[in-house]
Length: 216
Image (cartoon, rainbow, N blue to C red; front, side, top):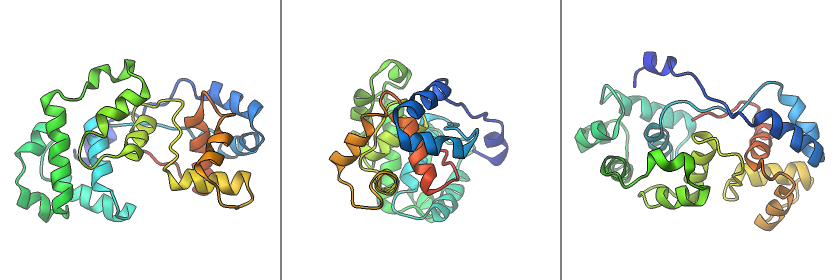
């Protein structure tokens, strides 16, 4: 995927966002303070499912800057970043782009899952969150956290609570417990007031730590 093709992809935003903000402002004192601080900023998605998941694999355990560098090199290996294109790449070329042996294996497994029909991509819109997570974690290199990020940033699911996310736990600690350590059960209890818009509240918690929105 070259720069020109990326530029033509318009971001998609959740239709439920405004309603969610009203709900959270009424239900949660922290959200009432946080939400107005970020104006018109909103969760958005662009690109396709395969590229989103491939990027998540490339970025594992390295800095954001390093991940972008490796992705840019990897993306140059093919005119379009598709499952079929990845399966045609030579391992040596993928390694030369900066990918570890393990990440090459993960990307190939991802491409095989998409190409073989093992993933019900067209049915995802009608499947519940846990069913999608079950499909995704069957792919090598994708754990529950990555699957939950996919639900949030690609499928724009409204009620995802990623309890394995360090930023969410740290943000709840800072905003609700004056910086005291927070357990998963503490976080889950706080999030009860956020339902059915847990994704939106999580996004604002992230913004409280880093005002620059993340997009995948």
